[in-house]
Length: 80
Image (cartoon, rainbow, N blue to C red; front, side, top):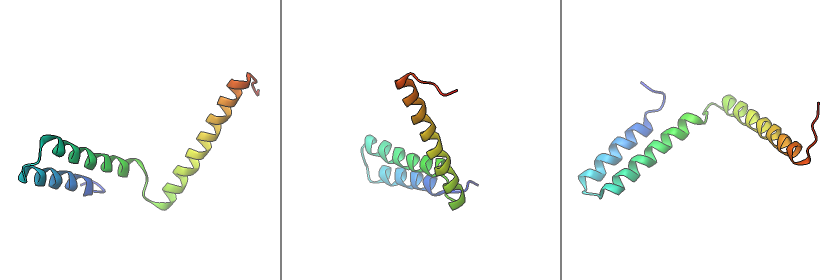
């Protein structure tokens, strides 16, 4: 069993409820897509506070290095 079953349950119940009330097909697809997107977000972003802090620290340093490389490309200077 997965760590978080909420997105799967929401997807199943939302789709079932939409079908039972006679919703149009695009509404059912939209509900399913939103539930799957919520599941992806919960899977990609960490939930434990230590993991969250490490993830954001790594992300910030990565973006800083990427910004430095862009600036070096624009100016044509390289630091060896």
